[in-house]
Length: 237
Length: 122
Picture 1 (cartoon, rainbow over the protein chains, first blue to last red):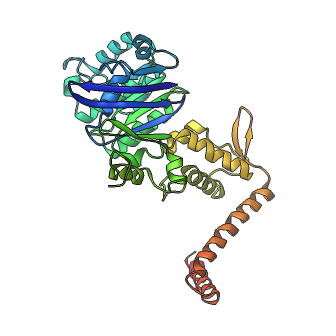
Picture 2 (picture 1 turned 90 degrees about the vertical axis):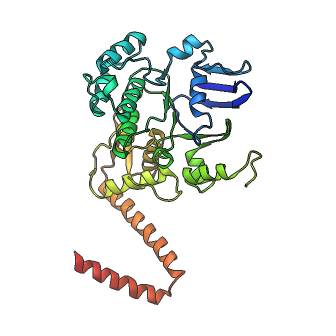
Picture 3 (picture 1 turned 180 degrees about the vertical axis):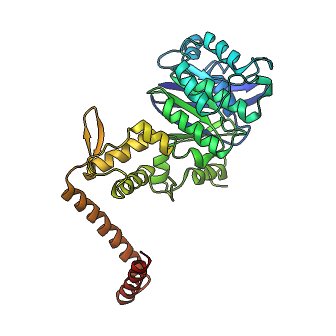
């Protein structure tokens, strides 16, 4: 279980994230939604200690509170900037495998094949979509407890998006928790258990999909639009 | 599969699987794929698939064999009864909705001529 309490983050005088609290239960798949610049990426970075959240922030993953243990159980590939352009994908994988003892070689092979990732290709020669697929495959190949996927669908066509989602559903270890940010709201609606919506660095909604449909009689997209039509006091604009 | 409107997803998945079973994709006594396989194939949350399967077990169309998975029931009479009930229910809601627009005499005329038409198409 992941518990996040009172997570705030400032950059100088600017508040990027304000007092965010939520929980993710074992096996839950969460969609992290919000317009560009609302803090989705920063939230993921704060969850892994890549940016330092304010001191009242409390994060615990399966009971672990220290960054070393949290990182060891969280699969997150924020980018490929650490890999030099001349490295082949095979080099990248060996590097990653050496760094993470929970790297699952069999799963990597299955996913790489499914997503047509050629391990002889050089990182510097990959298209945007190919880089996204590599980041995705590296992330999902670990036997982690928490998986953070930051807009895995950028520059990826609809058939590949479907393949990525299928790989996730097919290969993730039992009980894995997923937090995935995306703009493809209607595509992920049937895949996620719950949606967390950020707006201006605040968490404005945290609802299960079936509750949105059954109680509010809305699709996730309609619910998302409604959250955006409301101002910060929760009053409709 | 495509989702419609705001009906809970697990109900739509249950209807979809029911359709697959009634259309003989999974004949009497056959095993339904596991939750993870269905979830990946249909690109649907695993818990949603599980709830849909539970619904079909509750309705009596599937039976769970411990450690083996879910199977279509083998009792043909019971199977036909469930199929019959489903069609009756669909017909009932069709009639109720139609009667808000036309009289029952008019509906019966439309229905019979449509039925005649589809017989010709077969």
